[in-house]
View 1 (cartoon, one colour):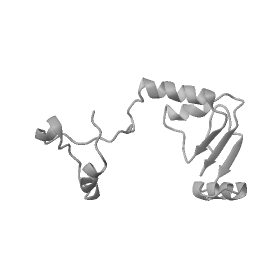
View 2 (cartoon, rainbow, N blue to C red):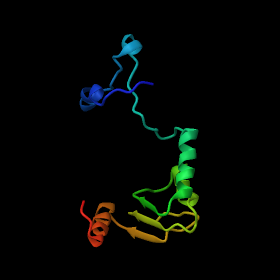
View 3 (tube, one colour):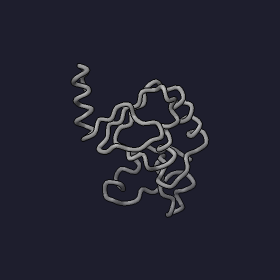
View 4 (tube, rainbow, N blue to C red):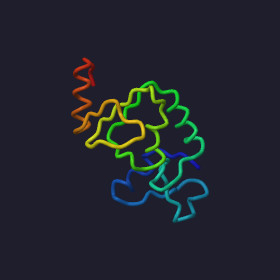
Length: 125
């Protein structure tokens, strides 16, 4: 696994093409495309990421979920990994079901709701 700058793939992406690797050993392989360092739908999270998710959930003192259907596992399990004593805020277009309900639900456009919260708290973006 090698890291390359976004500039290496920029032209191909902007022209709706596929960015290919042109460095090192893959230079000769015409099918060696660059893959982003993300997890695609259907791919499993690594054990390291799953362990970190559980550790962080157990240590958090506030849970804020913004703009999620919470339908894709394992992230859909996150709200129920947080201790029951932790306040839970949902900022979303629609309510979502979890085993432990959210303490507060702010339903509507996420940007508008977050902007209003920022304004009420006297913060600046």
